[in-house]
Each structure stands twice: as C-alpha cells, then as structure tokens.
Image 1 (cartoon, one colour):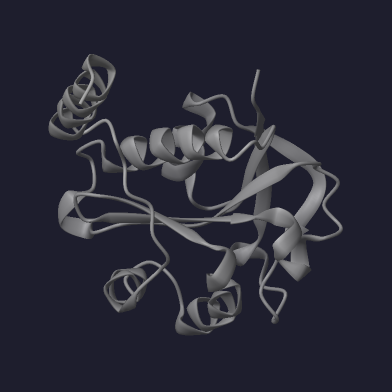
Image 2: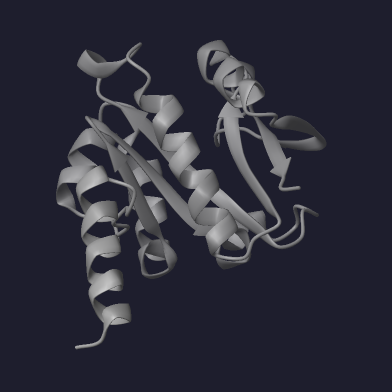
Length: 167
C-alpha cells in the first residue's frame, strides 16, 4: 500500500477513537421506550410513519429524531425552506441537567448542515421553558404565526415553532 492509504487509515482510526465520527441510525424500540417518558403514545405512534426518513441522534440517555420537514405532511404549510425538523428530543430523567440535551442539539445541527439543509426547526410547548432556554442558547428564534395544539385545543398544550438558519 502506498503512504496515502496508510495515512487515511491512521486518520480514520484517530477520529474513531476520539469519538468525532458519529453513527446516525433509524429509530428503534429502545428509543421508543425512552420516548414514552417524554411524549404521549399517540404522538410516538404518529411519527412512526416517518421513520424511513428519520435519523436518530443519541447521547448518554438521550435521543433526538431528525426528519426533513418536507417529509412530514402536517408541516408542509410552514414556510421555512430547505429545513430539517427536530421531531423529538428526550433525555432520561436521571440524566437531565448534565448537558445531554445540549450535546444532542449540537450533534443535530452538525448533521443537518452535513445533510445540506440551510434551516432547522422544531415545535416546543409554551410551558416547556427549560427547552426554550436551551434552543435560544443555540440561536433558535420563534417563528411567528405558526402554532400547534392538541385535538382538544387545550391552551396549556400549545406548541410554538422555533427555527435556526445556518450561516
């Protein structure tokens, strides 16, 4: 083998050992078990139809689902072009407050950029101030004029859309 091949093998091994190469995969049953601690079963069931287009980002007891917005029929009317959508973010209760959510968002931003998206967005419940603070820390802004509510139109369950444009 020539020196270039040896160099590439060594470089790949170093990156792998340092943890800079992230494995992204489709959702599985373990993810769904974790999600039941953060989301109602009907929401989890709803997103299953999009699993073929969804990649999972994970870190120490946390999981995040990333799906292109144009693949989710309910979000077709949201006028954010070329957008990756954070479908779910869930951190195990025992791991909250340890930076797992921050790590998940960082990985999702890296992945979305690598996938060629110029925007990333998500919906977050108005009452979830901790999540809003995390997203604001990364520069996410509220997208005015779009909101979601459950089927009972419960005001306490309204979600707003937040987005971030990559520079």
